[in-house]
Image 1 (cartoon, rainbow, N blue to C red):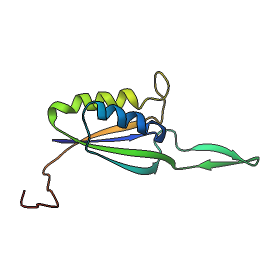
Image 2: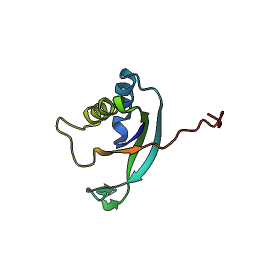
Image 3: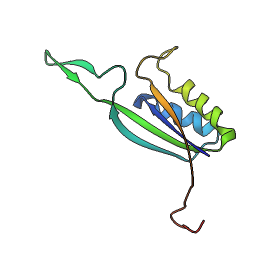
Image 4: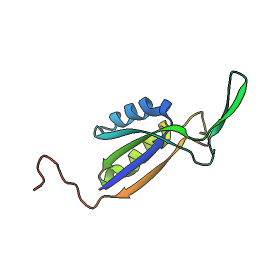
Length: 110
């Protein structure tokens, strides 16, 4: 099994979640996050004063998948998390991590 961790734009969350639901991926975890990558924050104007926003709002989507579901889930997230037709810097990243074990809290004996 693998954990797919996708860091995406908050505006794309509902689109990605609906697309994953169509793939019958129902077990997901979603968290708010703050950070930046290559864009290093952005400048904004407020009442005529320019200021720098160092940390940008992102959403982290975590999905636990079997090996045979891995590539379709990655493709789905990539396709639906793009902003614009070709995507832009800041659209996000996907990390794939191995899962050594899964323990159910309600039944730790497995």
